[in-house]
Length: 64
Image (tube, rainbow, N blue to C red):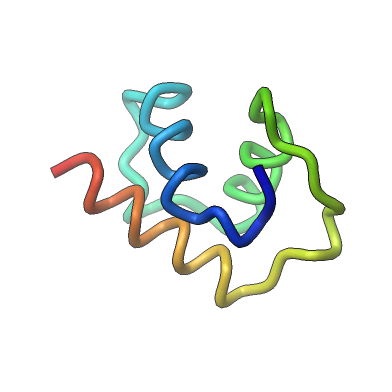
């Protein structure tokens, strides 16, 4: 996965952090958790606030 795979990342985060409410996550934590996902293979600097927001929104939608 790459940073641009925001929906796939969100789905993985739902499984990896089932007790987390993504509405209240800090972007620094979100960034670290994405980097730690198995199968994630991209550079830390390739992320942006826009990408992190997209991941967060997809995560919220996947939990509903």
